[in-house]
Each structure stands twice: as C-alpha cells, then as structure tokens.
Amino acid sequence: MVLTKRFWLLAALGIPLAALAAAIGQPILAVGYDVLLLAAAYASTRLAPQESNLRFARKFDPVLSVRAANQITLVLENDGPEPIRGELRDEPPPEYQASQRQFDIDIAPGDLKELRYTLVPEERGANEFRGTWLRIDCPLGLAQKQVVLPTEQPIRVYPNVLALKEFDLLNQRGRLNEIGIRRSRMRGLGMEFESLREYAEGDDYRKIDWKATARKGKLVVRQFEQERNQSIILCIDVGRHMLAEVNGVRKLDHVLDALLMLTNAASIAGDAVGLLVYADQVRQYLPPAKGRRQVTAIVDAIHDLVAEPIESDPVAAFGYLSARWKRRSLLVCFTDYEDPDRAGDLVMAIGPMARRHLAIVVRVTDPRIDEITRSRVETVPQMYLKASATMLSEDRRAAASAMAAAKLHTLDSEPQDLARKLVNYYFTVKERSLI
Image (tube, rainbow, N blue to C red; front, side):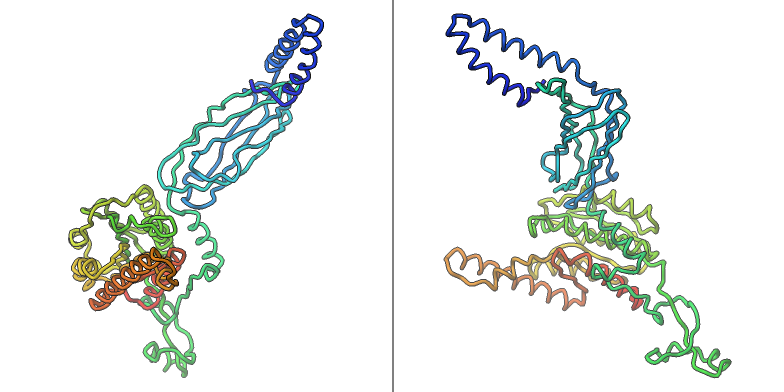
C-alpha cells in the first residue's frame, strides 16, 4: 500500500483536531481520527481492481543493438469489469538509458493500450528486465495498491544490427548514397558475361565483340557483371591493442559495428563470408559460407567478444588460417599498430598471405590525437600532453609507412566513418575485379 497526497492532506487536517481535542481533554478523538483514516486507506486497497485482470506483454527485437535507440513496446489489456488507473514503471537494467521508465495508465474494461519507449544499452552481452512495478488507484483516492508483475525477461545486446536494417532498406531503394556508400555495377568490369550492347563513347576497346560487330555492321561491346561467389575473411584481433577507447567506446566495439555492415553488404552481393578471431591464439574460426544463415552465425559469434589485456600473436593466427583456406579471398584484418615494431609483426604475419590473397589492415584512429597536436600550449600539463600526442602520432605514421613499404593495403578511419569507408572499399574491389 502506497499512501497518496490526499491521505497526507487529510492527515494534516487532523492536526487542528488534535489541538482542539487536547484543549478539551479528549485526546482520544485525535487518535480515533488517525485510526479511522488509516483503516479507510487499507480498506480501499481491498476494493481496488485486481492486478490479475491486467494482461501484460513486453515486445522488442530478439536482439538489441548496442549504443542505439531500441524500441520497447508494452502491451496492456484489461480483462476485468472495472477500469484500471494508476502508474506503471518498467525496470530495464539500470545502466541502460531509457527514454521513459514510468507511465500513467487508464485502461477501460476490455480495452488494450500500448506504451512505447526507447532503450540504449551501453555494453554488449546478456542482461535482463527485472520486472514491472504497478500502482493501482484505489477508491476514495487515499492509497494505491502496489504490486510487482513477474515480467522478468532476458536481453541479448549485439553490435548495431539496427544499422543493417537501414542498409537493407536503402539498398532496396537504390539510395545507399544517403549514408555515404557509393554503389555502382560498373558494367564492363567483372568476369561473368551478361549481355551485348552498342558501343558508347568511353567504353574499353578490349570489350568489343568483333564477331557481333561484323554481323551488325556497327561496334558492339560485351557487358560483364561482378562475380557473386567470391570469398571474404574477416580477421579480428581481440588482444590488448583493441582495449583502447575512442570517444568513450572501445576500438573493438567500433570495429564490430563496421564488420557487421561489411558482412551484410557481402551477403547481399552473393559472396561468402568467413570469420577468424584471435589473440594469443585463435579463438574462433568460421570458414567462408554464403547466405543469411552465415550472417546470423557471425553475429552470434561476435556479440559477446571482449578485448583482453594480452599480447596477440598474428603470426600464429594467420598461419592457422593459411593451413585451412587456400582459395584467393579478400582478407580484412581489424587490429591496431602504434609503432614500426608492431607493424613489422603484422607484415611478417600477413605478408605471406598477401601473395595469394588481397589483404587490407584496418585500424580505428582517434580524432583527439590530431586535435591535441594542433592545440596551443598554455600550461605545463598541456605541454606534456601535446608532446605525448605528437610522439604517438609520429609512431603511428612510421608504422603506416612500414606497412606501405611492404605493399600491404591499409585503411585508417575515425569511428563514425569506418563502416562507410569499409563498404566502399569492398565495392571498389568488386567493381575492379581485384579478387
């Protein structure tokens, strides 16, 4: 039972009564007033609508997306003969950001209402809704009947799968350019023959079909389409280098969001996608395969990955991959290298693979480093901070030069641009038939 403002107002009105009763020597009158008021409040809770008449359901996607606004819908249906009024408070994990947790309800008999709010999880992994608190208004308005509905429900938080839905929708409408992704079939490239058409200015002379030209008496060129059965292997370093944070989010989390977008794009393009997760040893390996089932398998494999404070062994990891996959593929390695020594280790690991495959090393950059190096120094702490940032920036440039000298492709990107740049690179590789 929760006492209302009306109860406390009536209780306050009993103060003058108590003073008057004391003045006439009848304090029992004040006690009787308070007892009667409490009894009325308690009796009203017995007359309140039963919570068993309220049907409750919570609806949301099977998996939630980390750092994204996930829609939560509460469905309430009154099966009883009386209206149910009061307050309802849903209890998602307290560390999640909810747009609203408490709602006023007024549901007529036989009526159904939906309440909506958004939930933003800050971390991937498993969690749960802890239940739902309900306060039902009682007759007389002196109290509310408080009950806890047994609505505990598990939550699975994955990388940003909501972005995949947006990608699919824009792809179907041919509007990927709205999110900065350039998509073109680039007719005339690729290896699979599609059709013949008349020559147009700018066409490659090597695509001219001379037999068809002779038959028709005018230049005719062959059109080719991109191959749809190529392979991509996504390699994720979960060692100490991925523990660093950019904008308050670990580099590994930024990587997983971009990796999901690339996986989805490759699946739509008809390519096979595989996964290699490594640190000091290989943690997971999924051979390349096609279809939405493979996308689901990759999502399940990466949703609870965490970076660990241990040194990674890329030489062992790519040796493991080399022994198990021979077909030429696009290898996308998500890791970090902060100095030439670390870059040398990666060259030693990926260099031999790059002779057979097309390999690219992807790392997340921190925009704050450039901001600090360009900032003005006014205090001694700022001087030390700028010196540290300058040294780190120079080491990273030297590491990038070492990678370039070894003729390894690299992609450096700030978090907000990583997925877009990665998917654009993949489409460019497809359009130019580089694998």
